Length: 200
Ligand code: ITT
Image (cartoon, rainbow, N blue to C red; front, side, top):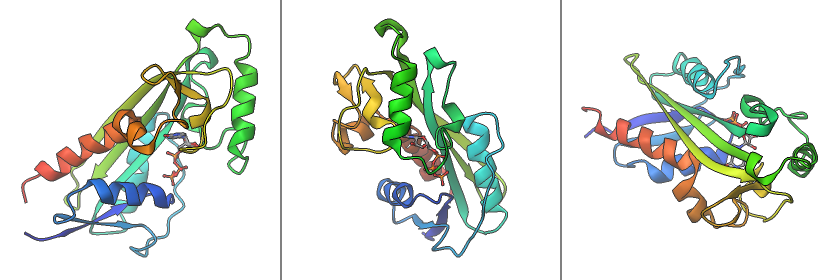
């Protein structure tokens, strides 16, 4: 069996490590863009998570003979018309600390009653093969925006995103507990299944 090189198209090192851990290592050698010597500033110009994931995957696939996987994710808050959505990392500025972003969202949600505080995390994954075939998957984690930030685990918007399963935020539960129910975990397991079932 030939081990195939797979480039994970992200600037986020944690995403590459997580992906390498879940994929069959005997079949795919997962490398970051940096390790593959690929430098690309890709503009996320799509109007959905799926479009943005595919834009990233195609852009990197044009620069390599490897399999390329990319993802795009974010937080969708119903009471705010879907904000921050595909602009999650750019919300209030790319370099603004997340405690400030989270505080701002809590303020905007201050008068929203419990039953209208629904939200979800979405993750779209796109894969482009050297022969041009394309695949994509989407994972969703349903929850609601709490009234205060809680927890130190996770990253980004986790402290204000609460799940019914645990009655607390995804920054309180363990990484394993989050991974089992998360948008990224779901999209990842689905793209893993597709990649591992491809005929060699
Ligand atoms: P790349 O674009 O280089 O992959 P990125 O970290 O900017 O890296 P995204 O474009 O997918 O990744 O942006 C994800 C945004 O959504 C980011 O601002 C996160 O804070 C937020 N987000 C996504 N998944 C999350 C999670 O599980 N917990 C908390 N916040 C999350």
